[in-house]
Image (tube, rainbow, N blue to C red):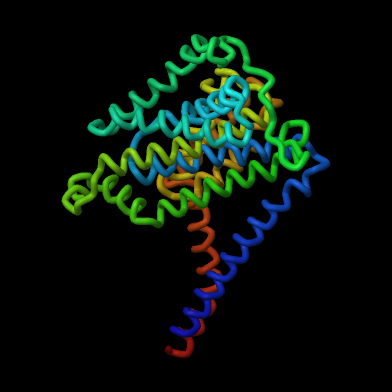
Length: 342
């Protein structure tokens, strides 16, 4: 019976790996498969962008246990920063992309400093204050190239070898968005599995115990702010160059609620659950758009049902499916064992 269980376990593990490989393979080739359906391809690109924002948000919120609500602000800073660097300071779009992400990371560290001695709700208030004040700063920054109250247009697209990565050339843009998405996923995954990730979890579960273990909570809080802000800023910078225009509407309540729903339903600290939720809710949000006034209602009901039925996020669905599969495979063996007296 022991050998059979080991074989079953190996089989399930190999099937799980096959499923992941198949999903990743389909994802990699999806821009080519969808090149004749530009609308769906556009939604897919937004999935990659939002996944690059929400994944790092789970790192700071779910793993480090810091109640940060500044992730969309970092995304917006990356977008405006990259635009200003390229349009006003003459940086190449690629260099501006990195500069914008770096600017978001620096702001993340600056916001992290007053949060070093704060906890819970107080951190949420400080970080959300950045989100709330940023529209006014964008309006007041017209002279430095933010566009003021109007949209900032004419942002140069990213270009390589004569290929532009813009909304008018979506297949190459989808591959680049996917690349940024995978970079974000890999960085978050590496951090989670590293000593830094272990320190985050230790401080989240018990800050006093973490300090007793010699973990410098100040240093690690600043590190997680810097990493999550940089990755969100990188996604924001790509967004700006991809669409060629941005405005302070990036900080709208609709965007904030969508990404917060993705974060919560994906499961805090259950990475990559937020990535699954990103694809589900981004597509759902778009497909419900024709319903207009009923869209928020249906969207809200689905969100509440997921939270009630799966409190730890949609990753619970996989756990439930695994149990069903294991019971389905295990029952005949158990019955056979009872009949033979083993």
